[in-house]
Length: 296
Image (cartoon, rainbow, N blue to C red; front, side):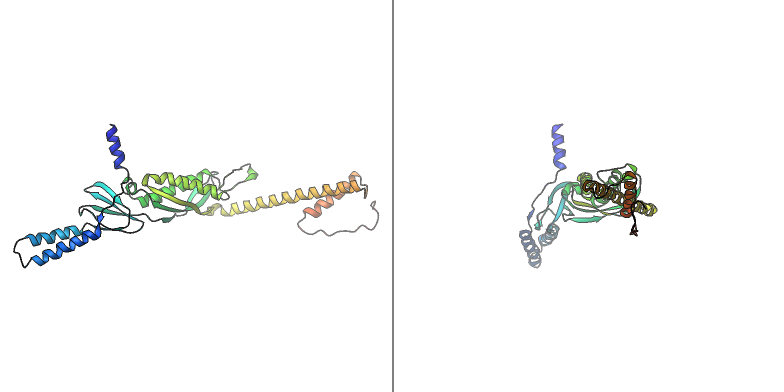
């Protein structure tokens, strides 16, 4: 039982091999081919023909691996190993050679329409940078690893969008520490972790994952824009009123402290009202000068 498990584990792991030198085998191939051709007029036996056929069979074993490239080798359906080191090699002519690129690739997903945590429809897309890390998993654990990247990335984006709200709306008592719009780094880290977990089964390494596009869906975009503008106006008004109250309070305190003028409660209320109108008004106030006494 334990032996079978160990054998299964060995078969599912990537095996890096370095085949025979291709230049040496190329030299032997040329000698065998041209030597057999030269012996045809001399000998009447079939050895020359056999030599030519053998040379042609050997030609199928030549293998060239480019930088950041790899070749997965199979012998009648059995995994033999993976060649990752770039160079010119020769392998068994009966090996099946599957090419897998180890270069970094970009994937810009389509804009997906999903609902955020609050149920608002949004449009979202992601930009993914990935590369193959384990050639065995990429070749045999999934049917098509490139299509697997696309499907799992879309699934991860849909899941992430449903976990966070698009934005905070404090007026409704909804306050979230992480939102899709404002928490860019936190959302990107969560997205990268989610995609990396999904693609690990295919031997894919996630280098970077970022949200490429984010907006409300068209049917609620105008309403949400007006809502955001109203929220901003209310917040600005709140700051203005807060500052005006502070300034009025400071003015009354300074007048009483320096005893510039003694005001009763009624005149304090009138002064407060006038100052609040001046400080909180949208337009510049037109002052009216009192040339008489305070009693008029």
